[in-house]
Amino acid sequence: VKLAELPTPALLIDVARMHANIRDMAAAAADAGIALRPHFKTSKCVPVVRAQLAAGAVGFAAATAAEVSALREAGVAEILWAHQPVGPVKVSCAVTSGATVGIDSVEVAGPLSAAAQRAGATVPYLIEVDTGLGRTGVPPSAVVELAKALARLPGLQLRGAFTHEGHLGRYPGDRSKVESAGRDAGSALVAAAQALRAAGYRCDTVSVGSTPGATSAPFVPGVTEARPGTYVFYDANQVALGSATLERCALTVLARVVTVRHDGVAIIDAGVKAMSSDMSVAGNGFGIAGQGLEFAAANEEHGYLQGPGAARLRVGDLLRIVPNHACGTVNMFSGAYAVEGDQAVERWPIVARH
Ligand SMILES: Cc1ncc(COP(=O)(O)O)c(C=O)c1O
Image 1 (cartoon, rainbow, N blue to C red):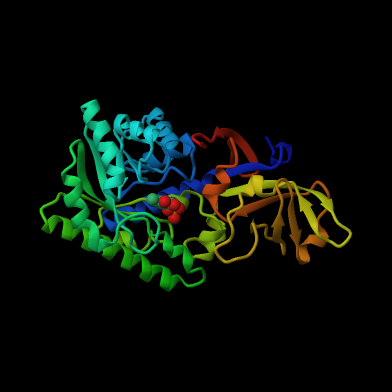
Image 2: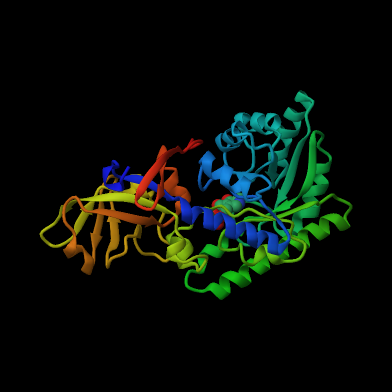
């Protein structure tokens, strides 16, 4: 169907752009000589997963128990659950799913070890290393001490170390800083892996992961895999970070103008319940509307477009808006339209939203 026939707001995936993004990241991973393990949180969409696997992805990373289950239902066996499994439901999912999990403390590991023992299972894990984000993970200097403590717990098997160099998102407009911070993160993780090996621990997997870091961290010698997620679609934030040009962005929200106010501000039917409330890393607006428009503000079901282009807009006009953060926007929709040219050719379910 023609885009004009779709209900709005609608989530659109430009299939040709998506395939180009998948192909190019697969080529970059091959270049770096590492395995590519895309993060499922971005698409939450099985047809997208299939395209990534067909291009050579070794498996997937997941953030939530629902994502782990959805990947398993889709037949993906090789899963890194890059998140601490805390609480009974997540512990049980970690023990039964066969996924490799992330651990950064004995407090996380204790209940997991007990549950694994009860089930007669062994849960593989990676130690999470904080290379600058300041979220989860231990500092590189603390990995050996943690490995020592975890080695006393039965039912767990150390496979390596991982980091999410999400702090690269702090440098919009400064690609050289993004690149150097990515190399530093990769080097810090490799040093942690070497310390683990020197202390007699197994460390086969050395996994970095982010889209802004995909051109730097995986190229540090000693890194074995990368887990970019956003690259499959890119978004306005990745454009601000220099990870991609606007022309590579495959995900848009289709919206309609519903009011043109007398002061020239145009109101569209896409607000935070379509775009998500994720702000721009560059500090401006809710997405890129183009055509001299600034997406300045949003309520739940309304977006406010201003700027020189707003005067041209009429009620009923269609706009395709590139969201700030693809992962957050996908999670607002239960389905995405696969678009070829100006035609929606299929509707793909978005799964594992909760
Ligand atoms: C643990 C982990 N790995 C990988 C990624 C993928 O990073 P990006 O969204 O920059 O592609 C994320 C994203 O938040 C993450 O949290």
